[in-house]
Amino acid sequence: MTDLVTERLLLHPLSPPEAVRLVMGDRTSGSHWAPGYPDEGDVSGATRFLTTCEAVGDPRPFGTYEIRVRETGLAVGGVDFHGPPDGTGAVTIGYGLVPAVRGKGYASEALRGLLLFARESGVTSVRGDTGHDNVGSQRVMAAAGMRLVADDGRLKFYEIAWPG
Image (tube, rainbow, N blue to C red; front, side):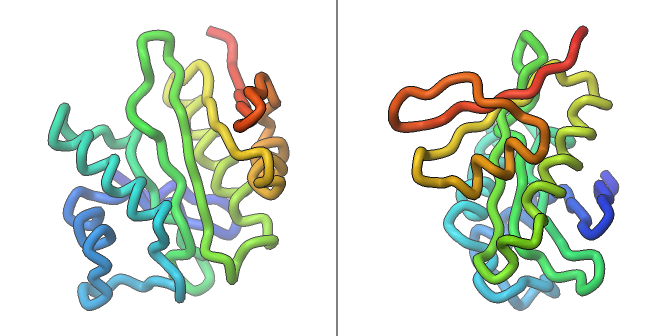
């Protein structure tokens, strides 16, 4: 599978061996990781990807993507599908960046890239959620075109849908 390319980023689909190295924190294998990468969220996403691979096979292209800055090649975060589309064509996503690069629009750009890919791949809707106190994440989803669809008092739920 090839990288998804945005204006400033590469969204690199992790292979199972790359996900294992990420989970293990293996910096010796030629990975170009920015300081702070991978964080807990990246490890969680790679672990979910590996669990899916074991249970039902490699879900790519609906797996985990490493967010890399095109100019430097450094991995600065991740964006992922929480699995392949369900019976209605819906997927759930997650994302995160190392603190040093937050506020540069990378998360919104990465999410827009993933949403475009999802739509072109026949996905009918994409869902995400965030805590009430995570205003940055709320702004990211809104900037990527997702809209607030529910609030349970603990989490805010966002979605974007396309006809047919």
